[in-house]
Length: 118
Image 1 (spheres, rainbow, N blue to C red):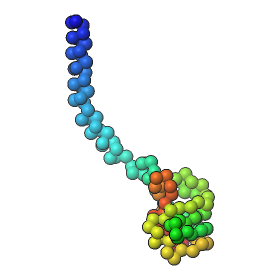
Image 2 (cartoon, one colour; image 1 turned 90 degrees about the vertical axis):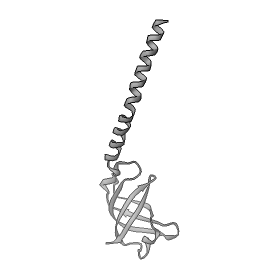
Image 3 (tube, helix red, strand yellow; image 1 turned 45 degrees about the vertical axis):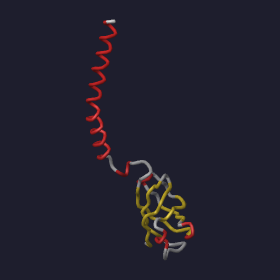
Image 4 (tube, rainbow, N blue to C red; image 1 turned 120 degrees about the vertical axis):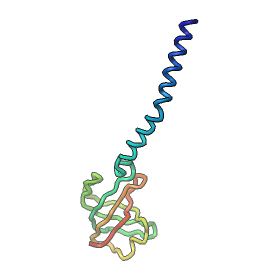
């Protein structure tokens, strides 16, 4: 009985110590998260690129580009479709034009947030 009582006291003391440390732990985690670069957040990497328009689908707000390598995203030269946000960015663009663009990964999908003729 005495052994059980001592074990209960030790468990209670450890539990109280952990509860006391919890606010400090939470604060340190919040600080670490605030200091992490936004670009490191999964699904929100951004980069700039250069490419040639190979297709425009204004109805779907999509543009397909043959772009040069984009080292910031680890992308080699390739042809790929991008969602364009806002869709008005497509106005005045034509297939065959060389463009500079800014892209980000939105929910794992590439999205163009700025594009202009070069």
